[in-house]
Image (cartoon, rainbow, N blue to C red; front, top):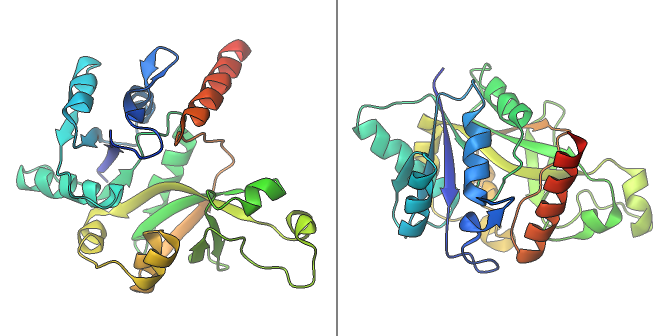
Length: 255
């Protein structure tokens, strides 16, 4: 099975412009992502996908592979679809594509291997990850997307609100009364499925929660969800960068 890791990297972030090029431990954030992804032998190839020449130059400077993509894309998934299609036109085909955001410098090899392993099941078309929520603050934050699954580990729904709602239980007791899970936003797709997804129009549920995975569910696609115990620190704001620096220092001090 040939697996392509695609790292979408946008310069024009609303909350943190230029974050893929922000320095973390002396290296651009996108370089951390590239190096982590490239070190996983289960992944055949990797490429950074961007619409900004500054990111192109930075990736080329550290020896990474990069592709300039259109600026019209609504999501990283759409950008991944362009990459897969253009590589196919060049005779480079893959069975699975993994979307690893360019602001995830601590993505774990275990997480990527788990996603690849999902496709040993021929029925898997989309796969993603979840991790247990440990605090009420984390549960109530709209920045943390929650996911609920069926008994076979297939996503039933994603929401920015806590799911499920515990009727008759004080909200500060929810976290000790019911397992809750946060969605870890790394996606893997069969490339044939990805080609279909990028052609779907936005759905009502997607617009309501601003979550593109709801478009897929609303159109009848099945999303396989696996649990990960590994910690991720995504970078959306300058404050997140400060937390990432502290986390990096803690890792280095442990060695």
